[in-house]
Image (tube, helix red, strand yellow):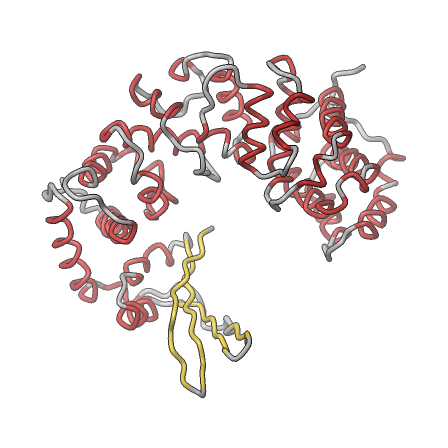
Length: 414
């Protein structure tokens, strides 16, 4: 058995059109397979195309073993070949190990119990990790399938992955985010799963203290998932959690901040600012989700304008006053002059029962200013991030008897 990368010959590549026809016939929902395959062939090497072809052929052979979610698995494969380093560096031997992994699951009819459309992504990643790190297996796959007896969700798959590979503690923040880990991050995860101290890993992107590493492995939750720069963001959260010693607010705080979502490297350079900001959430009364969201918007505005002074407020109560003043003063800045998209985008209109809904993208600072005034929130402060292309803002309204009323402002992240 060779350990070299796939090297498809002309006969193998010539079979692509027949494979595409077979996929289109098997799929339960529309998907431009032929067009997408043509795009991939123009942008990927023959080796990568050959690897994808083998995976697709294997899935087609087992169509009836997971027919309910076949289309989702195919879609994941096409997405995976574009950027997944683990997939694109897989050897022939590793591919065969992945196939054996799936065949064990087929035998136990696991795929008929899938409940989430996200599970195919997680399952393919587990198969890739298994093929690369089979020597690290600590328990039987067959024994672990009992975890998936009743249903298959990402939470159950996390436990399944833990059964196969984890002998000690499960660093949930990393294993929950498994499909989004880079090859380097997977290597770091497996380093930790071997019982090694994460602080000693050569793949650590940011230095981490003993206390911070403890919180990363033991404190960062079971249900939270990151989708990019997973290890770097996990370390950042661990550094903030170390300030308070608990994770009550960290996930809401992290998700609410556009800086932490889009400019994590900048945030790390000004770590003291964010530590001071997060420490305030631990003072006095317990902060609710609405306050944390408004607080994160306030911090983002300060941070984006390079006014990174120490926060003089020491409690939530005093910070609430400052946020109120900031909100009232928003209209005095120059965001209203910003324009980031043309007005060519059409409104999206739809009717549901007796209601008629209108969705419209807000494309200028003036649009956001008006939306803030009508809806009584601070979406106007998002203007700079819209202009930078980090997010897009849509306004949702309902029309009843020719009266249009705004009911919701929607943020779309990239």
